[in-house]
Picture (cartoon, rainbow, N blue to C red):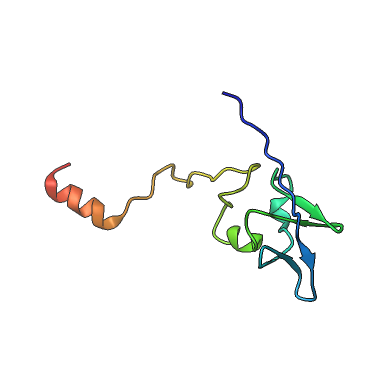
Length: 95
């Protein structure tokens, strides 16, 4: 099944002194890591993410889960992170 390309616009957005206001939320401009994402929308020569109002905070703990151009990396050891409480319970059961 082919993916549909969805186009998003910021219709109804208003530029105020605080920034771009869209649906009652003040939008921040995109982070440099967002470049290349398909969700980016331009408004008055600036680029915004209509999916998340503060894109820099989505990138603060790794890869943004909304990014269409980047994927999360596996940690360097190639292991999956396991909850220590669950691991101790599994060990007690003999798994």
